[in-house]
Length: 328
Image 1 (cartoon, rainbow, N blue to C red):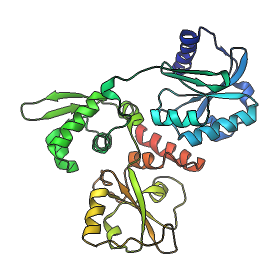
Image 2: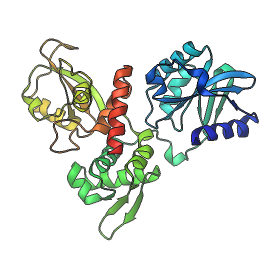
Image 3: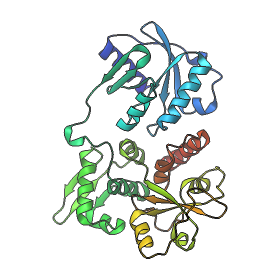
Image 4: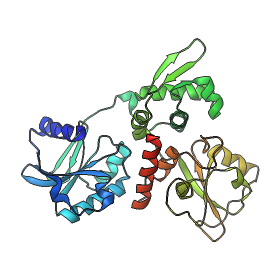
């Protein structure tokens, strides 16, 4: 297994110690949502036994969910747990450190407070100090994933997503700067070439993506909802077996919302939370209709909007939905 081999090599290179991997049979009787999401190994490091909890997916859970999973495995086995993953954003690293959760990103960072070890390496140049893509860059990449178009022309993207040519050109440079794609200059415009395989593109882009949701509001006027796609758990219930909510959730771009407020076509309810009659609207950083003729938000943006939800059923449903989309 690649990540496990990289982990063993990383320990040897940085600490000069050997990791002894034992059989997984000792890790029986763990919940399915744990064994389905992680590869588990009992290991001996510096004369102490640990459980290595290796994430199977690049699109990993939120730090809070990871912490709960680590605690569950530790309670069941009586051993300290080391969470292992191939990539983590700096924000999620900080959250795990705040939780004092043992974790290793092979060849990048080793945080093991139980062994009083905290090693970090600089793995990004000064030009790439930003942790996340801008909303326009994220929208462009998700648009590419949804439409199987890996050769993007700046004029076409500008027209499709209603961004200015300047914004599209800036996003192309940002995407290229993060190593996700390459720019080819045509006589009249820029062309962005992206990885052909859907999973490869997603795996490169995902660690740099954020939830599209800026904020949430509750409304009790429904006229505006006729044109908006379902979002949040309402959308997830359409894609999976998750039960729908009583109070439906919709999504709208910040530009559309501001225009609706200006034209007074929407009335925001005074209730700060759900009542028997109001609906929730998520205000997004970018358009909520990357799939033009669908009344549901796209699966990638939906995944990003709910990835921090601590409910394990929701996380399992999200993972199922995403894997189905990437395999499809």
